[in-house]
Amino acid sequence: MTEENKMHKNKCGGKNKAMLAYGMIQLGSSVISAIALAAIALSFCSLKQESNIFNECVEEVKASGQSSSNAVRFCNGGK
Image (cartoon, rainbow, N blue to C red; front, side, top):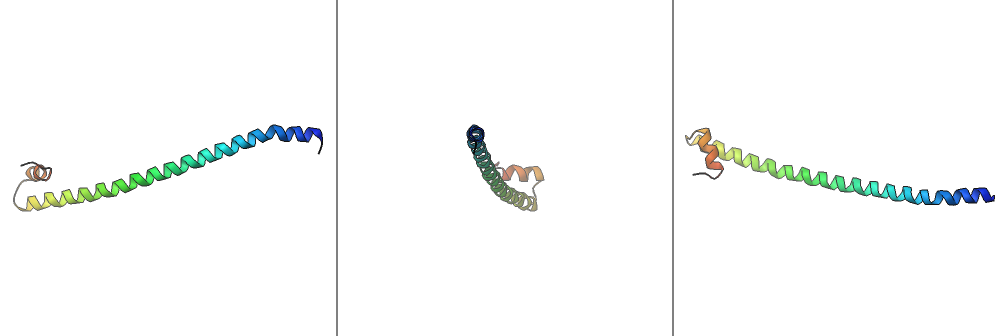
């Protein structure tokens, strides 16, 4: 190798390390984003289940002869 090639290689060494660090940071942030999205999706499942239970409560109270507004109030914890 000539002296010029060695100098060029030494100058690029810092850039390679910086690019490797940048790639690792990008990969880490992608993993964190994926975990956050999975957590949000799981919270929607529990919200859907709670909504179904509330709808069943309203239908049951309406079947007993009360109006829709009274059924909703009752299922929300009203008297």
